Image 1 (spheres, rainbow over the protein chains, first blue to last red):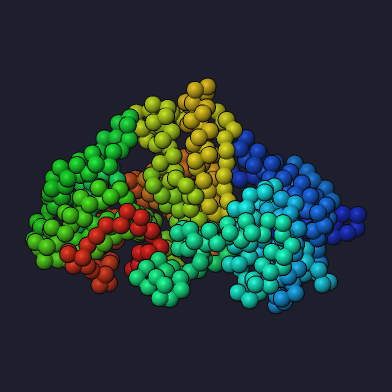
Image 2: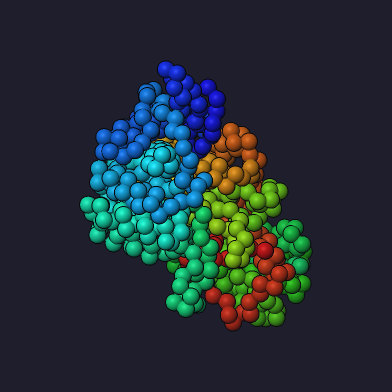
Length: 215
Length: 324
């Protein structure tokens, strides 16, 4: 197995299964944690990730095919394609991404990191990867955070295509939209993530000088 | 530049004297929290009674008189309002009498700056952990040099969580170091673990631990709470290290005195091939020297305020303070 990349959560290896290229995502042990806690975290996250991938697939979301799941590792299809973040994103792709997220949310799956870094473009289609932070949830808050992450990651016009498509097919669009505006108004988020307020609106507010957080 | 720094954001009144980045004195008086914790008005009264004595003590240790001072700094925030007022008033009074400019110091920035200076790290990912704050920060340049918060607690600070647990378990004195002592030789019990990206949350963990207090031994609870909460910090920190591609790690603040936390961070740094640094405990606990150290730099860069314009900010975030 060849190491492809190492993240905080897991390491990705390249391998072959039945002659087909596959990736293995292994949640490795962390020396800083006591063993019981370490194994518990790695086991439950692996299991939950595999389940979510399966549920997403059942909901009709393009995801990598699962080949196998072990205690701390998942083996899945290697998708040939380009990461959306490494390519010129088109409005059509953003509408596609919006439709995918509404499919996920309608099945009560929140992705947790739904950004161009976790979307692979392949033959006119988009595939969602990395369900490592995903959860089963029907909370408007969690769903709104999924949207917020995309909003922070792409330009305004592109996000518009994304959100239009999302809200036209989402079952709870009103509540999610309301929650999204609420989150954006929270002090902590305004300070940390949304950068300069509209000039003139709060000119005396030093907070408005804080730069955007880069995802 | 002979600078006096005054700190009174929480339970400690501190007076430190720094000259050219060198600490000459670091005097302090700490309110005895006993088993009951802090009552802001009582702590403020304690500070007011001790201010003059601690400042005198610092001057004596440094072998100087008030007249020798060239600059003054105090903690503007974040902290408890009544407590912050004491250092602010002391600094204003002295500055007015001596005709000096005042530096309004951000408490978090002061903790970070002294730790960074002592550990010799240039641009580390900083874990700042104390009673009221738990944040992961990194220096950012625009629109002014400041510490950008890249991850933080979504509810209470980790020190606050440990103190609350200590009170619930009737430990005396009711704070983190007693929890650490009680935890020795404990066994691990399953507790809620909440990390969201680079943010974390401690209230669910605290509530569960408090529920278990009636059934389980304090030893096991303390051990498990420590292991769980510190592991949460480590996970968020590792994500921050990889995201920013940073190879330096620094810990500071009151909770940075924990030997268990430091050993976990040492292991984390080794696994990520990063350098790890921290400062002696004297400067991790709230102190005046860190304020003086930061104030000196501010004053040298012209970030001086006249005494009549000084104020306090209870919720003064690190991101709002310019760093020099």
